[in-house]
Image (tube, rainbow, N blue to C red):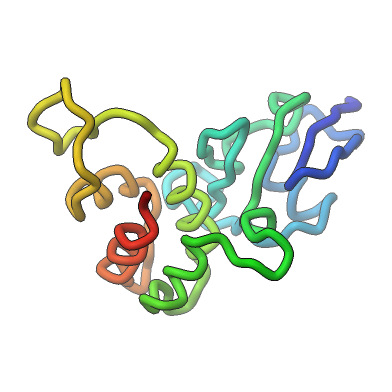
Length: 162
């Protein structure tokens, strides 16, 4: 099937098997290897990308389902040589160890900062909560880090948050 999508601001037209995941399209066909294949079951978050402004697990999205969409991967977060503020904060706070989960953590954090409303840890569901460490942990709970760099990840996100 022929699909068209915009990846990191660049229009792309590709012929894909209808069973191909977005993750496999990005990695195998487009050469964007930032999003990682961790569990391939949507449980670890290593493959998180941003689709039309919302974070998503690329291993669970079929490539044909994102026809016409705009996809941002970790490679598209920086603008030229200028890193995204979250990328800078991750470096400053040493928010990675092995780095395998870092692309997914970064894309998830970018998407999370754009999401409105409270999470399950917020007591008052009527007001927009402050972005406390507890709130960040809850909103980022779909992204796992086997090295345990969570404290530094949370502090980096907290610093980069608007």
